[in-house]
Length: 160
Image (cartoon, rainbow, N blue to C red; front, side, top):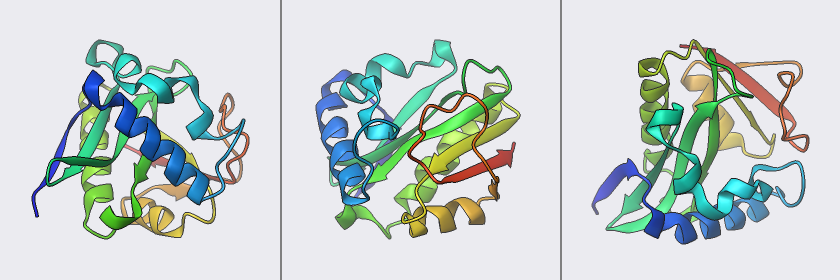
């Protein structure tokens, strides 16, 4: 098997949208207040660009897109970024792709001057939470002011 991590291109938008919506549905993240409902999901490559200090990376297995993850400013902040939309198809979990995606996103964040990284997720996404804890994210009691994902019930922050 060949694995790859690279920046999203416009021709991959449709595949990434399908993955985000399918994996979101698998975990009950349906409707307002959840990442899969964000307008950007339809055209990720148009919302994540280096000049905006944001990036969305895709993971591939044997050339097929199996998921992705991104980094962007949290609520317009120059110091706090947000790890966004880390979604992987079930058949690609357990291969280390989530860690690789997150590591590359955090490297990008550091290189672009962010000092902290925030994320929100769901308590039923236990493998993802375990990964975040292993990478040094700590749990918060409540979401950061300005979060748009009111349906999430786990909030985490990491110093970069």
